[in-house]
Image (cartoon, rainbow, N blue to C red; front, side):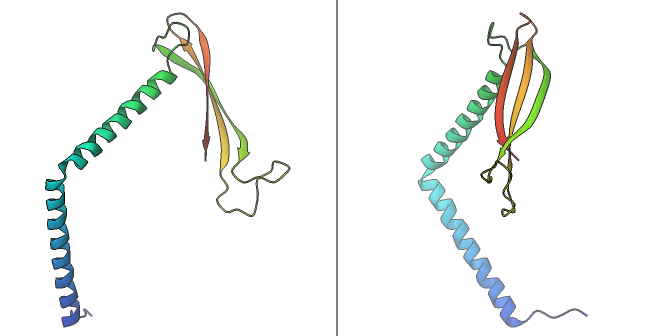
Amino acid sequence: MRKAISVIEIQILLVLIIVILFGFSFLIKFIKENMWIVYLGIAFIIILVVMAYFKNQEEKKCKKCFSQNTSLIDSEDGIIGWKYMTKKGLPDKRRNNNKAKHLLKKRFECSECKHIFEIEMTYER
């Protein structure tokens, strides 16, 4: 059976709609007056994306001839520790979300000079 909407619920809904409309108009007015904040935010995001792209390209670059034409030979992933550990180096069982610290080793081979190089990175999972 369907319940009818009460008068109080309708009044609350109307007040929320009016508050949302005023808030939206205030936001639009603020953005028009302070457009430099929007431009600064967009420039910051673009700079972060470009830095991440170049960082990713730098990892795969040959250390000897600086070529980006490399291929992955193999990779190893091992646990080097825990976020919360006991004195013996074992994971602390008192923590629910105790993440493992991993060491990832990737070996690449340059297709041009046949140089083999290794990249290490750590992450938590």
